[in-house]
Amino acid sequence: MLNVFASDAFSTVSLTRAIQAVPYQPQLLGQLGIFEPQPISTDTAAIEKLGNTLGLVQSSPRGSPPSRIAEDKRTLRNVATVRLATSERIYASQVNGVRAFGQMDAVETMQSYAMRRMARLRANIEATMENLRLGAIKGIVYDADGTTVIQNWFTFWGISAPSDINFALGTSTTDVNGKCTAVIRAMQANGDGAFLPSTRVLGLCGNAFWDSLISHPNVEKWFLNRPAADTYLAGTAYQAFSFGGIDFVNYRGTDDGTTIAGIDTNEVRFVPVGASDCFQMAYSPMSESDFFVNTLGLPIYALQVPDLQRGFWTDLEVYSYPLPIVTRPKMLQKGTRT
Image (cartoon, rainbow, N blue to C red; front, side, top):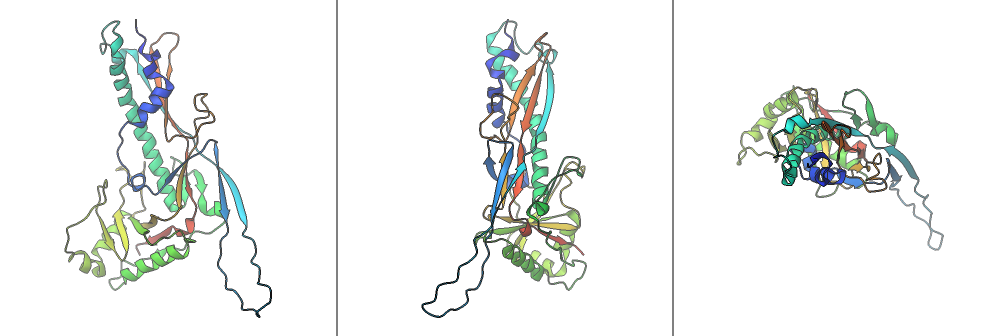
């Protein structure tokens, strides 16, 4: 009789390949593509920073030796990726009757069943990845509990978080366009050349900030008299519109407000989109398994752990070893509503 749990279709490599193709719900920060994937072969990522400052050149007499500039200081730091793991157990009784007794062509049916369960596990991993990305664009990456700090990128680089920009949306005469200009200028000044001519600024708004923004008198004049209909960013449920050179989006977290809390209701987080090397997502290999030691990391891994004694069940397990990296956290501006 066929033991489907022991077939090639359920091997670690086959499941990992198959789960790469499992469709999942698009998520805004992942969909934007601002986190450049960086597969690595170790459990830690080495991050090198080369100082690059501009200075004025003092004039000197002709024939004299030119002044020498000091060599740029290089800093190299290691930072560990994190381990994400989730699992589900499939019992043989759950798939009883799916295949005919002794039929060898039932593996695909069994594998399809497993892939449906894998899709749920992957959805949890993807939600966690979005939560990590959300922390990264704020400069501090938190674990799932919302309190444990995985990485504080301001502390890592030895800098202070930029001061908040008060949009004063509770005041009817506020020059909101001028506030937007201040955000863009601050982001450009702190970009160390990463802000390109093609870079655009994205403002991820909390609910109260969004409501105050679109109803502000100086915004409403423009917002209500646009020649085009409302526009949306692909894959988002909430509206988005451009004002003052910034694309504002009412970011939507999970409906419970806690799993992925999103943006604080009175805040807006500004993110450079299309800037050079601002965000990366490092992926370590699944070095816990002999199958993937000394290989470049993949975004996600899947394997099965069967009941070898009785064949009653098999555990489906999904792993990921990511770390969102922020190379220029001073570009991450925050605005407040009042």
